[in-house]
Length: 294
Image (tube, rainbow, N blue to C red):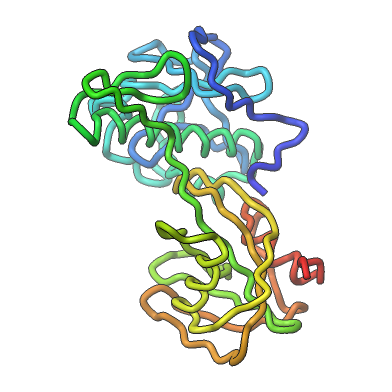
């Protein structure tokens, strides 16, 4: 999966007062695009030394021993992020930063290095958090960076804001040697996925599993068992993967506002996604090979 970068390691702990290293990696986002160079199927990020400082270089984390920085105010005037207009996919510009690639499509444009793509996704999550919390949601005052931990604080009302992490589930619904596979409406993704959804307030993850399967496919489930989790930074998620069995009828009543396809697929007919970045892909292949938790 995207976070499986061994022997590399993302050191995401907060480091107060970290200086700027010219050899560090530089993340410049413009709206939902990352400035980078795509060379073959590999992504290359600029170094701090590649670009004169036009704004703050904010320390994010380290990839192995390489510090990584966010280029704040370096590319536009939206206050903390960068320009709100995203460069169109495929448009190349003469810049040491490379082209603007939508972060959601980065996994299609580049297969590696995996550790760099994972770092880019994590940086994008922090970029959005900083950008969305320049003002306090309680009193409207301008916030400032905390000095002792990764947080922003409001000097006016003392509110402290931490990075947002949204729990969600991925669900492998099974019936004997068949698994329920879906395609979501309104997305240009040609390959199959699994039932998924966000956890509601006051809901357990297991309750989310049962509700999402009922809402999207009209099926009751039982024997809900946990498999594995995954950070999915482009939408601030922490995904929890579950398998479960159909309880009763296997007739699908698909929610056509959410899905464009929902079908039962036999183990031997399961095909994976184009890369092995996602928990969804791993869960489908685990079922194909008969290795799902019982």
